Length: 436
Ligand SMILES: Cc1cc2nc3c(=O)[nH]c(=O)nc-3n(C[C@H](O)[C@H](O)[C@H](O)COP(=O)(O)OP(=O)(O)OC[C@H]3O[C@@H](n4cnc5c(N)ncnc54)[C@H](O)[C@@H]3O)c2cc1C
Image 1 (cartoon, rainbow, N blue to C red):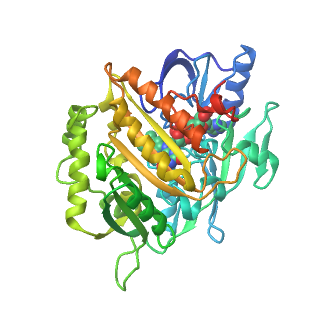
Image 2: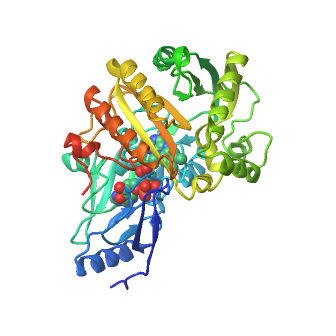
Image 3: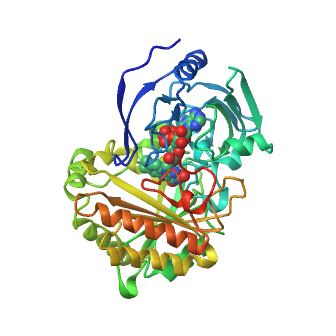
């Protein structure tokens, strides 16, 4: 049986939620069985952890051990005819795209970071910037294998009640050990991107809604500081697979993908220092203003970008979340049905102004409804709001999140557990998957 590991500090990605736990790091199924047996012998229920990219406490255990699943990361098979890859739950999206891009495949749904594991992606049923076209990752999972309490591995196919019980279940009975995922075939590793400014919330919602039918990827960066006639103004990015011209490189290598990642003229260490000095400060108001004004001045801007540069830009500033120490930061992501979106998101913006706590980075997306039993995504919009936590704003921030909770109840929306840091929505709504 595994020895009890020494307790260590375990953090959510936002660095605001912390626990101290013994962490098991099995690198084989047998080592995982041993860790589970050791927990059971002590009467402790472990919490499973992928890469710890959930912002809050989803992969923390205030009451006991954590089992980190990243060691179970082997690719067991890939069928080029169907695009189905079978891989350990600890494999990251980053390792997956590096494997699949030279074969002309890309994960059908990716998150804003490539460090997420397949197990963590399934347990939260993650979504991407192509939420309208491709739904959530669960729409592309063929089966999951789960380690049962008697030590057996059970493969569960999609379309069964047992599958519905695993998908989006962030507190499962047993760990997911393998995932079969259908990848998307791509002719090129590049996207044709268009960026344009929208002057207010109505224009932003309208642009995202209209873009969803002609574009694979649709996302907006909202300037939450803007008030009055500019409330909800944004910079919208839409993208489709690049229309390949004869003789052009296809961009189907890791080197071509990463060569396209450009942060601007400043090197990463300087950018990180800049972020450290501005994170949480009033300067972020100017950064948002500059981004909007520059997009508005350029009109409709068109460019080609690699899938990696478009999807995972922030990963090339490793440790950017550290800039928010000591208080950390939280993210609150509101999902609101389309019919209620105009009024609800306007209220979400006004609540920030009234509270004197305004999001430093806000991302808006258009989604199709996810019908899975634990689904959190309506046919509508999501707005993800980042807030640095400081000594001065902490209590106002918690009150603001409570006001968002109430707003979501009012408009039939949902919060997203992967981002939740101070959450009460599940408890208020009595929804499944609430905190233990
Ligand atoms: C920069 C950034 C951008 C992001 N962008 C998006 C986005 O665009 N869309 C989106 O949907 N999310 C996004 N996220 C959130 C992230 O995708 C989810 O929190 C995801 O679940 C993290 O995966 P992980 O492997 O780090 O899992 P963790 O955060 O470690 O765990 C997540 C949950 O899964 C459970 N879990 C993990 N592995 C297993 C397993 N093998 N078996 C059973 N349960 C398991 C954990 O107990 C926990 O409840 C983003 C996060 C960051 C930091």
